[in-house]
Length: 274
Length: 273
Image 1 (spheres, rainbow over the protein chains, first blue to last red):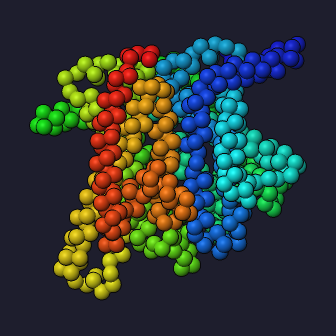
Image 2: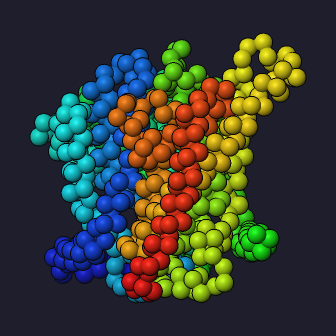
Image 3: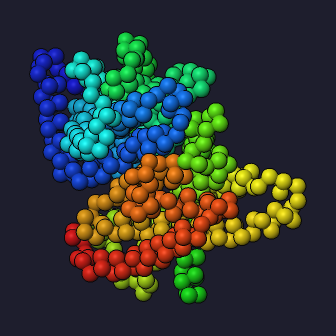
């Protein structure tokens, strides 16, 4: 039987909190064990910094009205956003579903996705020191590029990063449910990665896009995942309310789809294989 | 030598048979390659808009660079990734023992046991793109005479292909050394992921980067030798110092991996090491 936390036992209001604390602290301990691996994962997110090098060497940024400092701040901010919005759910879940590890999780009175969510959050906490070190290195090298927003902006940016992570998590959950139908569903993540790479603002600021492509990109959820939080963090002028509204709208639109697919998929689950 | 060829053919035959079980993957992989290529071309067009160039490279020449990157990335997916990402698992589970016990060179077994057809779309797309860029970047007035085109292309093509082989050798060495680090650190399978994400820098000519990064991409992580140098040779603007440097680098890398693997094996203490 599946139960959502706190959904069935109304008598105990502290239960969700206790579960969250237990999950997060155990997952954090687990992630600390693998901190060397996580440092490598953090390193593998250097793409925005490489793109910064390319954009700085080209006149294309100036042509779009972006000074080298603005480019630097934007790409550094995009780097930070990417670090704290990484989602690998589909790869872990595929293994769990194939090897039957999902079965014991289903027996617990807790939706298995909560456990994965806690793992992601714990992994982000483990990343913090590495990201700070990398930012400090860049700051020593080119101080003008360090994004230093005011406290209010910083708070908004953090909120946007958390929201962007939720959106990515929900979007990948939808794909993850394909694990119930296929043995190699993780390959689908490669397809999802493509629009994410090129439309989110990770490799090029949206301001440099031709107007038509920019409108197309903004009709997808992807710019909300990088461009919006990065612009907030870099201290660029940005429509704050509209950006958050868009993030919330995409989350609210996609979440029911993910939950519905979960219900359909779990009926097909046969404890081993797909 | 003939024995090696026979073994590798048997290896690849079985690996292909296993991979072809998952035919839907072909579609996913094709879409992924095309999508990545379209995205890369889009970003390149952003950088080139309004008559700008990138580090002194023309649009057509930059296409050759992007094509070679796609080609090498396809080769990585075909041969390097399926084999070398397994070394980590071998060390972790202790199954490296079985590899070492076989009467065949362990480096060969680890490097050529598997092959995956899913990199082929990348190889093909890379060949088409670099070929197209190459034809477009021919000197003007040459296009009308097929004879002249052939005589003009033959030199650059020969040098370019040799340099491309050198690039593949360097790429293999980078992967192999990183993967064999698992003898000491066990869980390094994402170290190769780091490598792959940094090699993305090879999508653009090396002169597009700021001077400090150029040094890094030449001497620390030889991205320059992977795409820029062969592309330069292909469009007929190669320089002998770079070509020789590339060949020396490739030879040093291959010899280095051999020595490194022997050194690593001395530290191998079987499972749970």
